[in-house]
Amino acid sequence: MRSEVPRERLRFSSNPRMPPERRKRMKLDRRTGAKPKRKPGTRPDWKARAGPGGPPQKAARSSQRKPPARPSAAAAAIAVAAAEEERRLRQRNRLTLEEDKPAVERCLEELVFGEVEDDEDELLRRLRGRRVQRHEDSGDSEVENEAKDNFPPQKKPVWVDEEDEDEEMVDMVNNRFRKDMMKNASESQLSKDNLKKRLKEEFQHAMGGVPAWAETNKRKSSSDDESEEDEDDLLQRTGNFISTSTSLPRGILKMKNCQHANAERPTAARISSVQFHPGAQIVMVAGLDNAVSLFQVDGKTNPKIQSIYLERFPIFKACFSANGEEVLATSTHSKVLYVYDMLAGKLIPVHQVRGLKEKIVRSFEVSPDGSFLLINGIAGYLHLLSMKTKELIGSMKINGRVAASTFSSDSKKVYTSSGDGEVYVWDVNSRKCLNRFVDEGSLYGLSIATSRNGQYVACGSNCGVVNIYNQDSCLQETNPKPIKAVMNLVTGVTSLTFNPTTEILAIASEKMKEAVRLVHLPSCTVFSNFPVIKKKNISHVHTMDFSPRSGYFALGNEKGKALMYRLHHYSDF
Image 1: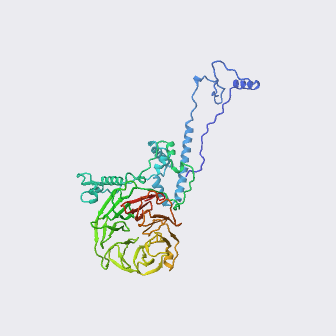
Image 2 (image 1 turned 90 degrees about the vertical axis):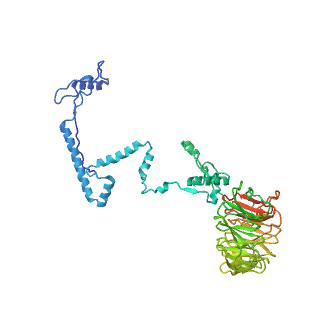
Image 3 (image 1 turned 60 degrees about the horizontal axis):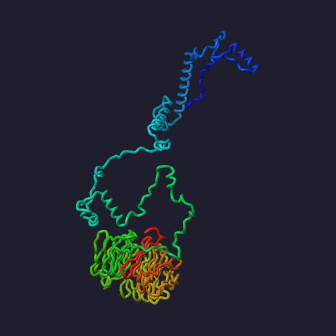
């Protein structure tokens, strides 16, 4: 802290007196108002001074001027003494302030500023010189230099593992999935970087190029004008910035007909199952040709990934497990249940389940949580199995024949449609009947489905009517009334499927051509633009499914085609 002691300053005063001739001329000029006359070739010497106490001196010519007088040695000594006195007072005031500071503050000042007890100017010079030198070395702007000052220095690693620097090689021969990616025999081993590039190439080949979501936007940065033109599209257009509602509108469903899902493996046999993988962009197609095929979904070529052939095993139904790691398949005339492990690439036949006395195993359901497997038996029996061990947990029985069954979205209840037109609601844990009611207007049921949000239950009957119920009313009322009865089909409803967002209900009948409709929820109205009756390319529909985020809709017919449609309202797969 600097003291407020006034400095002693040296003043050099002079009182030059004007010569009498000059004074006389100036008086005459002031009276007459005329300028004094000068002799040609001469100029006045304004710095002429009179000697101390003596007569006035004449002005000398410019070539004979004398340099100004320097301060005497006495004046310089006085200035030095004043500066020394000021420094001494400043040091005394600083010491006085230092005595009042705590020890912690003094320690911090020594760490930050160093030991500069004698001279504060040295501290200022040190800080100023360090900043100036850093800025002179770099040609960056002031803002960039300030950012560099604030950026913490990079620390060196404490230790370095030599094994990390070694490039690890991956075996390509002994792995059946990597073996297919080898281009020649010399590629028995690949580095991790090369394997990554190879996997990327395989993915792009399967997708038909780089997907739109994987492309990076390259922005120009050459000049300010170009960067302004490359701003976000939202700032480059005018119009209504308020987005429309995300709910699906009724009336017309915007959709596009895509390449058949099984176009790379055509077949003439009936398609019995079509299902999208719950976690990957894959669709499974199975039919009476004894094969289960997996295809990559891109909407253009849908390249085939793998086909599994089951000898003398016409597939009645095939389904993914809840986690997508297994494929389960049953036949039209066998009690064997095939389980295909997709990770290990193994096909495991389950020939006999202890306690299960069914001669033929056909229709089954997998619980949404992946814990249970429900098999529809004969004589009204329902068998609950463990999905992990494939062992029988217990059985349930209804009156009459089991037409169809399904799990609730939370996997805690089972809804069963009987051949007598009744619907049974079972508790999975206790395997007791919670409720039983008659499907309104149904002589005997054919299909049943529940929505994923736990709101609706749809029941299809032999007369072509689909009753949509509220799930709460099905649990609490003995005679619930349907929210809506959809009567757009005239033959028995054999297939019912809700989309994952519970905005579409797909209904179909395998007994009549083009007998498929898409119902909008919650308005319960049918979309008028599907199917296109003039084309007549759908034929008899046996199975349907929506992709995990409703971006695609697929159905299989008796001609061996897995038709696929792109729903434009949903942006994701």
